[in-house]
Each structure stands twice: as C-alpha cells, then as structure tokens.
Image (cartoon, rainbow, N blue to C red):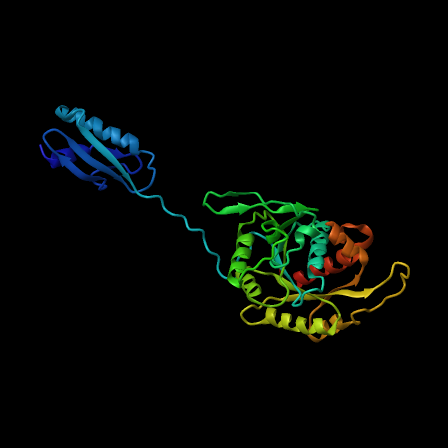
Length: 357
C-alpha cells in the first residue's frame, strides 16, 4: 500500500459546499504512509471552515474502515488560511460625510469675535426648528463647547464595531450632539501639539464619533487659516462655510483672507454668508439706543463687495455671555433667541437651498 491507495480512498470524501472531493481540491498535503501510521494535513482555503472537524472525522473513519490495520494510527491535521485582515475603507479626499446631510464650517479667521458663541447658538436654533444637529469642536487649542453646553465633566464612552474600528459616543445637551477634544484633556493643561498631531486627533474625532443621523454637523473651526483648516476641508465633504466677524476694520481684513481660503482652487467651498457679531450694544435701561462700539456696517459692506449674503447682525447682549458661561446657549431662551432663530438659522437654510444642497 502506498500514497496513491490512500488518495484513492480519500477521493470518496467530498466537501459539502462544493460537492468536490478533497483530493481534486488539493486539500491533502504532507501525506506520509509508513508501516504503522498514516498522516496528512487537511488544508482549508479559509479561516474557520464550518466543515473542518466533520471532514477530519470522515477521513479518519473511511481510512480506518478501508485499512483496519491502521485503525488508531491515523493522524489528520487541520490547516486553515489565516483570517483576512479587514482594512477600513479610506474615503476619497473631501468625500467623508458619515451619513450627515450638511457639514457646515463656522470660521472666523480671527480670534475673539464670538465664533464659538455663534456656533453654539446656531446649533440650538437649528434644533429648535426641528433639525437633527451635532457640533464638532475643532477649536483644538481652545475648546469651549463643553462649557457652553454644560457638559464639562462628560467622559465619552466607546466600543468597537465588527471591523474593529473604535466608536465614540458624543455628549447630548439641549438636543445637540457635542464632541470636543476638551472631553479628553485636563482643562488646566495647555495643549501643546504640532499641526500633524492636532490634525490626526481631529480626524479621529470626526470619523470615529457615532453621530447617528444628522441634518447638520457644525464644525467650530480654529481661528485663522492653517494646516488644521486645510486638512479638515480636504477630508470632509463640507456643504458650505459661515464666517463670523465683528464690524471692526481689523477683523474684516482677516475675513477677506478667510474668504480667499474657502474660494481657493484646491478648496472650493461655497461661502454661505457672513455673520456680523457684536454689531451694536443696547443697554437694558435704554432699549431704543444703539451704540456701535466696534464700528457700523463693516461686515455688511464687506458682504456686498464680496457678493456674499449677510446672514445676520447679532447685537452685543450681556445675556449671551451669561448664558454661554452658564452652559445654556441664549438661543434656548424665547426672549433673546430671535437673532438666531428667525435670522441666522433660517437664512442659513435658505442659502443652502440655493446651492442645491
């Protein structure tokens, strides 16, 4: 008796899924036949073949019955193909949406103009209009959304999907989903990161957060123009941008540069409009008076010259600051929400419709 005799017997064993015998499929490897033993390997083309154990037993049984002198001396080993490593699909540049209908970049090109305050109140106003809204706090060196939404102590929970990609769950406050780097760092510590490190952190927050179904994701961009802005805009499919400014001449000069960034050929993101924040100040005791502390009509004139809509003029109101510090954006209050509800939020939706989004 030799190897051919063994192979001839094993041809009578078929794989249930293919109805083809094991020998024809090339599954018999390292066959050894001696005077006192039969030994070979069953090689499977996939990991965790459900028939591996039953086929091994079938081979041992048919050989023992055909060659009883070898009963108890037949060794069949199983070799399975290694599991295929599933690589998560990398989205094309500027294509990631995560199933979100509209991703809106809220930029300022200059710090201190109230961009984060406008973002927070715009999110609440959109939510009050019935939209599903989330905020990504991308102001990585000065995250303020945890404070503005009263979720400073939130610690994001996470788990893993079947493909091994970690998922992070955002905070939920006033009906708005919030994700911020501020959830992962000590608020007393300065964040000293180089551009690539900050960019990678933001990309993880964006892609791994379980946003669910959203109509709007507002990105509170860092002030200025730089690597983080470029990376976010080239990674995400952004529907449009809003630029926040004060009427001050110096702020408006930076806004022009911000508009140029969004209009650059390699970016090409529509600027949906300008928001003039701190447009005027009206004291509570003099409700008919307006004091133009930072100048008058600067953003309106810039919008006209750049052929961009002026989405809203938001006055400098003490309650806006107090509400932000208290973790309840002023847009939640009926008495002071008009500038955000009937102004900014509705005008944003109108401009989006004009772009075909």
